[in-house]
Image 1: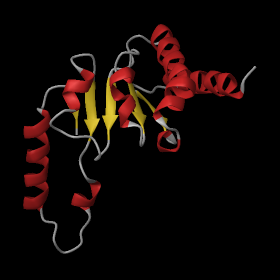
Image 2: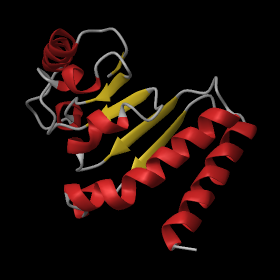
Image 3: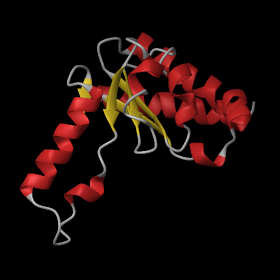
Image 4: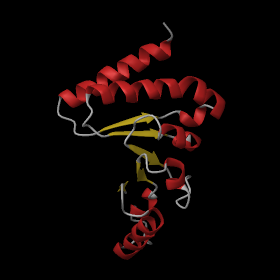
Length: 146
């Protein structure tokens, strides 16, 4: 049995137990996506991510499922076809095209630069409001977790 299959099973069981323990939403992180080129991501990571989504949705159909492929935004379109409810996007994803890649299949989460919230002498409530408004204007407020 390949280690990727063993790890996939462990992730499914762990996340399922999170729901049993009371979780109302689940987020899966492919935290090392930036370490895998696109071809190998599709070959090795994507089947695992697909199996995780399928199994969790079968067990817990009413629990929203989010996925974040850190550093692998090239996979967002395919991830949006696997049954996830929300795709997390990082700052490298163009706000102008983010929705084009996921179509109406999923919502979006993220793309707000956390540096905008760090008190460094230049950030104010007004700058936070302005940058949050820019995010909403670019991505739209529907199906968005900012």
